[in-house]
Image (tube, rainbow, N blue to C red):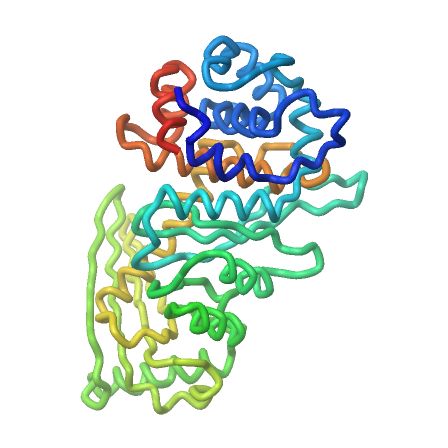
Length: 375
């Protein structure tokens, strides 16, 4: 197996080794490669990684030089606790760009807390990470850790500097509905689609009023695109109605939002066990070229970051149960999980969910080898 020219080895082999030279018994690329392969195959901590390495040592030695065998779990932990997470994340982004075509369609931005990464004894809070998710391809494009004294509002612009969203529709929940974020998306060459709630009180009230008045007149004086979907399953029926309009001159805060060109109302009517509830949600967008139906699809696709990334990280990778927390290790291990998930999602030679594919990778060395060669 030619590991030397593997894109993974090329990108991650360039990382700055954080260890003192006299303590480098194991090559940097060995530590990273063994860890990623172990996590693909089901490892959830440093002890698991060490056990994987020892169990697969003969196989690993066919493409890695192992002059001092397999590192101990303490060595893995110390290394990733010291490794610069920003540099590691940049290598991940560069690698993703090479193995995957440029993101198209919509890119969802959202945050998640790794709940067990806190350390009460050291007064260390659990890390909160904002991720960018390509909804069409199901690929994590990058992540940024939120500073302890900050929030997603400052992290999203930093992530926008790292990932390529040119010509994409960037979606965010109400936390991301900020003028600075809208400006950052426009400057990056994309369009924004932002949920509007009470944190933008005036804007929220204006949009509500515009649609209320328009509906009272049966939309006679508002030029709208209308789209509707109906989902049924598990005893639930949900109708989603979308009204998309560029008739936004009545918005008093219009001039404060860069490139703002349209607003959207999404009405969800859900019936479960005979009980019906109705919820209206509102959005603003700078989109000028996509039809309203595409924007409606992006609104729904945004939640893919919850059930195809965050939920998978919890259920298939047990992220919320992971107690890795020393130094930068928690942030770096979050990157490793996304790296493993990308490898699993981009390999289509096996069927099944992520958890099933991880089991297959643990059982079948040929499958694991196939994934390594493709990454």
